[in-house]
Every structure is written in C-alpha cells, then in structure tokens.
Length: 116
Image (cartoon, rainbow, N blue to C red; front, side, top):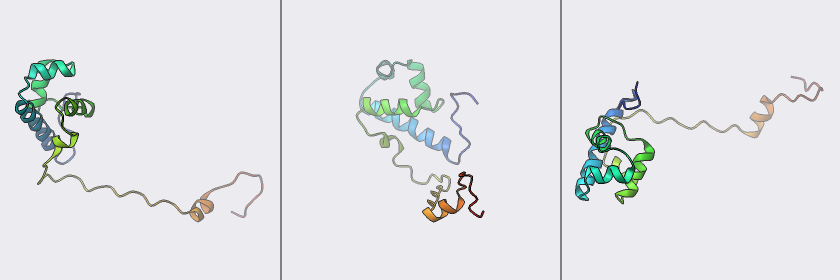
C-alpha cells in the first residue's frame, strides 16, 4: 500500500479521511484562500492540495496540524461533526498490577532460594 493511500483497513477510516478533506476545502474557500496560497504556505505543490481536498491523498497528522494553524482553527475542527460514523470498539486500559502481585511474580536472583 502506497503512502498516498486513503485506506487503513479500519471501519470508517476512509469516511473520516473524506470528511477531513471536505472540511479542509470548505474552510479554505470560506477564508478566500486559493489552493496555490495554501500550498505555498505549507511548502507543498498545488497538486497535493488538490489531492488532499479531493480525498485522493490522506493528510498526515503533522500537515493537518499546520493547516489548522495557518487557517486559525483547532485541529478538532476537521473532525467535527462526525456523527453516524461507526468506529472500532475502544480498547480498555490494562489494570495496573498491585504491589503484592508484582512481588509474587518477581523472581529475585540473590542466590538464595525463596521457596518458589
């Protein structure tokens, strides 16, 4: 898979990418900034801005951050509103082990048998 691909295999990933692309285009147009001006400010080609906005090339997190700064919006702007997009089930954090569990699972290499 090439670096310009928009699919990550996750549910809704391409939908989110398309949403971000649409929001970038709408904001740029609202601010009356041309693709050429945005491209020059980001140090990329006008063609790349066109690909971003068309959803043909995924915008990297770093470049999206720069777009947000240049267009004077929080990064969250590009993701809101995302109602109706079903993503994966969130992963739950692992429970931290207690001190007792850590002591009982640790093998001490002191040369003296601890009865384990």
